[in-house]
Length: 88
Image 1 (cartoon, rainbow, N blue to C red):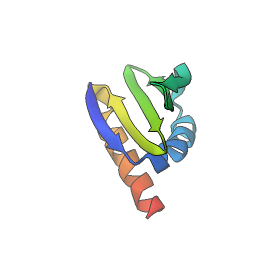
Image 2 (image 1 turned 30 degrees about the horizontal axis):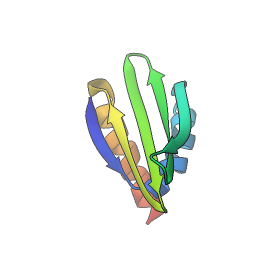
Image 3 (image 1 turned 60 degrees about the horizontal axis):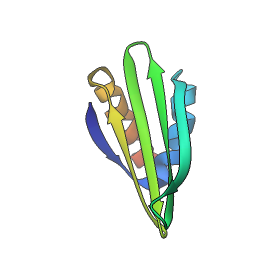
Image 4 (image 1 turned 180 degrees about the vertical axis):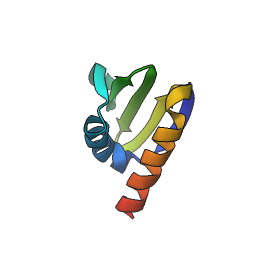
C-alpha cells in the first residue's frame, strides 16, 4: 500500500469520481475521532485494485489521505492530479 495525501476539499469530488469510474464501495464507516473530531473512511475495489479514503476533522482542521494498492497507484495519482487542477 502507498499513501497519497489529499486536499480535504477534494474528498467529496473524489467520492463522486470513484463511482463514475466504476469503483465499488466495499466498506464505509464514520464516527467520532478522539473527543473533539469526527472522520470517515471509505474503501473501494475494482478488480484486484483497492483504495481507501481516510478523512479526519479535528476542531475544524481537516486532513485526508488515500491508501492505495500497488495496482491502483498510477490511476489514483492521475485522478488526484486531475481533481487538483479542476479545483484551482
